[in-house]
Image (cartoon, rainbow, N blue to C red; front, side):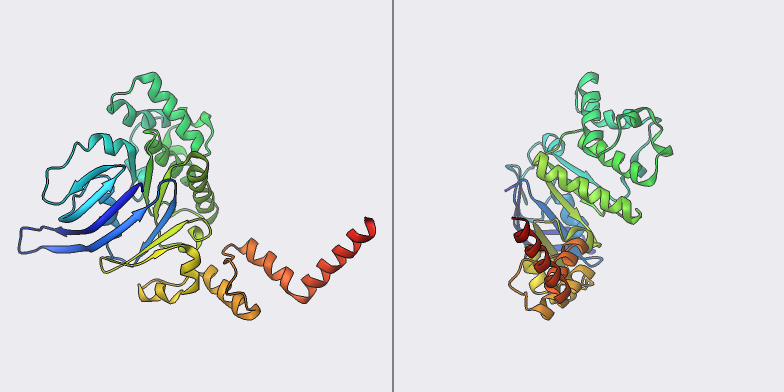
Length: 301
């Protein structure tokens, strides 16, 4: 496992009269190289959970094991600097943390602070920019003159420049237009599949992540209400409503098609393209076209 939480609770202001428990008895495992989505209503504990993943917050009960670095409640923490190099945390609106006058200077800032040479830092910057699907010509550009989508990708690249094993992103598509959102999610999936990085995304736009996430974790009032695959979630979307979440359109459409054609044992089709293709094959017109295609192929043979 990349991350393992064992009966973890976290309480803000634990020693004061104003103590507030944000997470209760969380037991959770996130496999290496997986793409995991985390969702929950406002105040469910999502942001608190993310900050446990690289030691920004330490559990008040239980143990957090991240890449074999164990942080236990009530015990002295191990050195966390190496862990924070391996776990990149991208907060909402990361572009607001950019401050240099070129993209390259922003991207090399972190690696240089962690003791890398200038040459290595620049190589990391170039690789990170390419990982986000951006042109190297942007390295010399002022980040504040980029488009919104480019600037968000460049800001994420500044975290990738550290070459982390795990990338944790809090609402990475917030405020982006639909095209930029789709491009960013596709890029993050490629980082997971092709580079083997463990990607964790907190989102309230479940539609855009459902087709790609290997696993989902749903939080409700600081507790885990569900953890499992998108297929398991599609089989019982009422779980989402129980967590105060809106059932995504893709799940609604899939349930309607599954009910109409008796497909509840099938793997859910959660993109418009895959669902349209399925419907075309199931409808009489689609079946007729398929039959004509087969006849033509047989005649040709």
